[in-house]
Image (cartoon, rainbow, N blue to C red):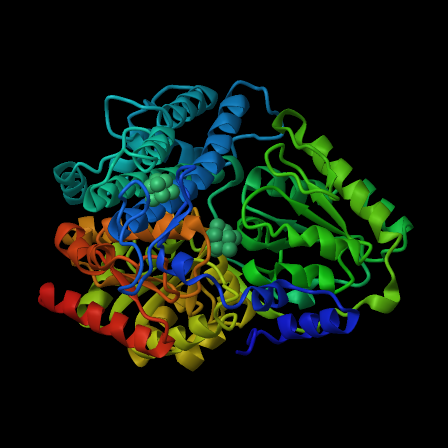
Length: 633
Ligand code: BF8
Ligand code: SF4
């Protein structure tokens, strides 16, 4: 199997081979064949009598030592994956909420409230009074409300029920899946899947859905507070792929998730004294900050910071030999980075007490003196630059233009140029007329198990040709950005006539002189909540629930437990959701059936697992067709 279709990644891998450095692809090859029990979800280690395994074939024991059968094992494994994903988004969101609280109390001076309108909009939505109050008072109440959503309450999660349609809330209540605390939902999932608790696979899965809805709330909190503290994104043009590294600058890559660190670091990287110091060290162009993965999305859409790469190709940034510091916070950071950084002059800098890596330098980041920490990090990068070996530099001269930052607010503001009074109307009219056949949200990662980016590109070509409007978050947006799909040129080249006409009308009204980009970049993975907001606005406007809309989602190259959590809440939201990799559930016919079929009866949404991208796109198009028929379109 070809490792990637991204030429920049392939060029970096060539350098690695020449230097005898192993990468994620080599390590994957060393793992093959991977364990068939694990692949099917049929291995349990939840107690010390295990590990227990059930053969996916008719031979061998049918239960583990305690009597847990395949259905129980698979559903428990899935539930724990969702709990872990929720814990990740939850920790990120809680970190944001604590910082908003500190900011409101004047304890984090580097975090002013940058978007008062967003703060007021969020406050109004969650029932915090706004009129006649100081901004900091409102911010404090919003932060407290967010923090309240983490522990067990008598009432449903504020962020889960105030951001979806009434119909969804009714469905969730009816099925008993409304979460009452983000952290408590995670704890409940861990409890019910431990030794000798919940043994009803369907009940376990409904518990997992409840936890996934807590994940949704966490994502939404993270997005809301990021906008409040750093500004709601609006479209910007930047570039993506390894070619954004600059051999004449101190190159610093920001990798991870939380904008609390990366946004501040970007602000500080513009300071003259630091740039002078970089120049004095021999970097004639000063400091060049680039992004990786989701934090890369955050700073791309708010500060035009170019995206070096994402997900499975993160090691490639170091392999260019031109990266002076890789600064990480948490999530999706391969431990292998330390070994690769060691082969070069690159400083790997960890910043969070919960995410250290042996051999990395740890510069701990604290919000009360955020800018000071950021300066220290940049100074360490300048020191590392001085040790750079210019003979080992191989920056592939490859990068694409990418337009990023299509928040719902930005989309509505673009649409308002067509209809000031009723901005959603042009969008809905075009869906009704069929100019926009439907909407597909791409989310999730790149995986070493699929040729990098191949599924994304094959699917988008098929969907766009059929007039499906494309939204993207997370490393899905990284893939499209690197290959030039977030440009007006991609719209000209790949969009069907109806879609092209709509994107051109909006683009021209916005004064772009051409169409909007083919892929609307909505942000990081937590910003998948923005796509949910857009879907909810459309549903409310049409007076139908989400499970009736011609909207689908796809994670064609998913990797993480976070992606599993997001996929599950998308399904619960009523959205048919495609996975391009097979999750470890096939060991249970029952669980597979619940996810791909019963879910449809319960929630309207369901999983579609298809590893062939063209077939997957065709299936999604026919699903959109069914939904359109249901609406009488
Ligand atoms: O949260 S898409 S590889 S970076 S998990 Fe990770 Fe997957 Fe990227 Fe962002 Ni999302
Ligand atoms: Fe085996 Fe049951 Fe223990 Fe799992 S919980 S390891 S199936 S005995």
